Length: 486
Image (cartoon, rainbow, N blue to C red; front, side, top):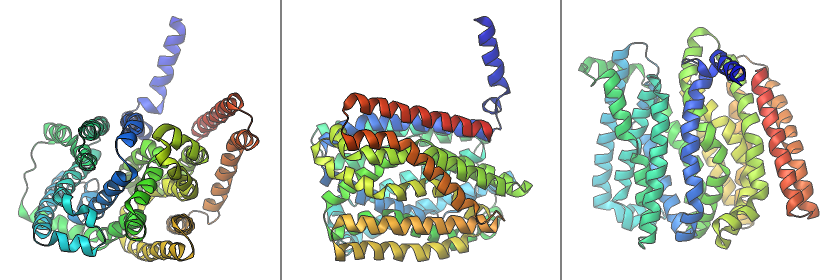
């Protein structure tokens, strides 16, 4: 027994996870915190979904969409450049510049909403947000500050601290939503819970960073230099970010204008639960990819990092996303309540889009790493109108179902186009993307076959559980074999 323990310890010591500079260790640290955080969120969803109605969730989705879109403007995306400078003084200058821009933007927004908030929200088909307009700048400040500090922490490789803050965010947000909901404060409880979740971890990050690096002291000249040196971020990346985020949130904003807050709530729940794999590991890989990609650019290994990340994300994400979508109608009704059954139908429609987005999202950081923000902006300028057109055509030819179907087809096509461009400028084979996409899609179909067979023939609960266990075990083996080989 002692010999086995010694061998296991020796194996771990020699593995990549034991190396403090290993990307695998960095991903595992953030992913570990994210997994715990999302587990808290998953465990509380059946409670929250029974306290609040789909209409309540629809108002929260619209509020979150507004915050997310404005968040891309508030700091002009200078925070994305924080991990890039070699010189520490310029990194600190970027931190100060980003925080200063955040505070200035939020102050001006608060004044605008105070003076003309009712008029603007009515014109934008968001009258449901009028009673809660004071929460918009508050939520924006919380989210923006956390993002800036997270980028600084990524530069300093404080990945364990980032992981702890994710747990804090999830736990504090869930407690606030449940407590306020039980007190009958609806839908305000969802909005306040969202703000609490966004602000959670700010003090932890700030304390760790100040202990390691101290309070930034810099000259005005440093601010001017970094503002000019990284001017492509506000010139291109900011508008690209606005277009990307608007594109991701456009369905909620259009649905509230065309249909109702109930439809928005159902759609947002489908998107949230189907995006669980992205929440678990996709965000963690994306954050580490920024740091590793910046280094890889300097040492010439960026094409290799791209190919490995692309293949890894497909192997990790495709099967879980498609499995959730397959089981969604029954699963949503069982876990969330009968009022959420239609959200399961929505999940099936959007699953291909969510799967491709899971792969593209971390890789999209290459536009910043390669300083090709202008091309990224051009592609997003094309993508957003296509999304709006898809939603409009769907409403003309049918209902929200057709709108989601058209939107899914459009997103899949454009995401593949964007990744093809990145693959091309890195000098990789033009057949690489399509070949690996087909391979991983085939493996996903094979893994889902036992479940499809069990469900379609109605073979009963026991056979379904056996099929599910078999598919999950086979998936686990494929993931382990892939990472051992690569």
